[in-house]
Length: 531
Image 1: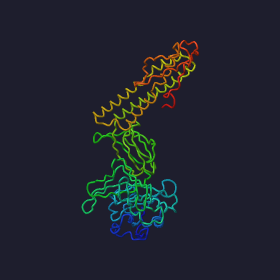
Image 2: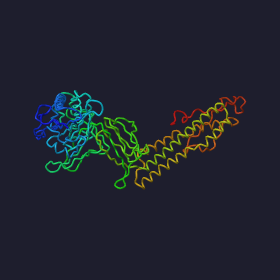
Image 3: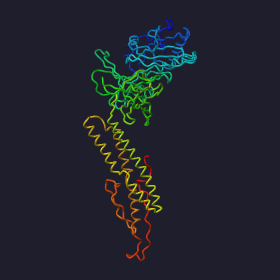
Image 4: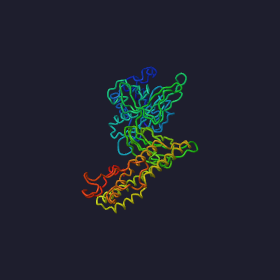
């Protein structure tokens, strides 16, 4: 591999001496403090980029950095390949590069490689941040035109660069003081923080003499920048935890945040249930994804026999909410993620909740039976209406008898009540979640189907019309008890209208009997039904 050698003088994009001690800068306010960046650069021999071409590439890149970013980046070019000698940036480890970045805030490791297909080059790079001691993901940037490779290199370093901020307030949202945000930049491209940027918060626990005792990232928690006012960034806290940023934390600490830029790498998860020797892969569960402001989720895939699932590269360049579902209905885990944040596989524990899933399956089956009954009732009511209109009362009687053989409403009410009572008792005895939010929603939906669609108004109306047709004087006959009558008390149907006024009790001047009135469409029979 070919490095820059000793021919390139140490300097920075703004013309200042970046090799000076970082101690004076550390005393400045964070928003006015530039980033001291130490850069190692290497060239793959297969890229066929000579020493002169390499020097010209770096010179043009530094010119672009000065033109668009300016003072926020204090770049220090190293005279040798350093950790990139015999390695690619992908092979670097934090333990290897951490000591080399001592005295500065960031280390960049850049490399020129040949394009995998066709002509041109491929530029790769990653960043080590000394504040949180994290080595970022690997970024790749195509450079199809070698003469314009400096622009591709500048775009690569913009993606590699991760701003640092201090969290100054976290209730209800978060406010960040972003390092370098108050420094002037020649172009908007050089702004350190913009709306839409995503940060990950970290706890830095301090020991004696301000030494760092532990650095801990907050899992499943992100800070999404909604607004930038001066050097202050106001963020929405997006987390899968109930209290991701508690107000009371033991010990001395700093709460910082590191900016994230998604890389073109797959995002891998492994879902497991149980602990220790009892740990098992969560296989066969459905994973869905939606944007932060989207209500509808789309299915991503199903976990394999090892509980693994992978989001492809470039799945999304924004935060998404992932939800793991058992049987496609019961949420087991919901958490945010920035696809491409890291190539490492993340292991996520889940609680299967088999009892809750079984209850939801029974409720779904009960709903299917109700919808089927609604459809069968609708067919019979349509036929009854046609036969009553044609006064084919024998057919009406046959259809009424068929209607009576349908399952009555009270059967469904009793079955629903038994499911709910059994779930409550089991949940209290075993101490396991059964009546989850999803299960309660299914219970409410089933109850609503019964109350809205399984009334007997239509049946009673046709039965009353048939009985009037069979009475010698057309008067109403008290209906016999029917198993279809709902379990609750109902108001009896009104008596039929009396004959025309002025008729005598003997019927001498009475008008001829009118045919039995055809029942109107009851409220429960019209409108749309859920099938």
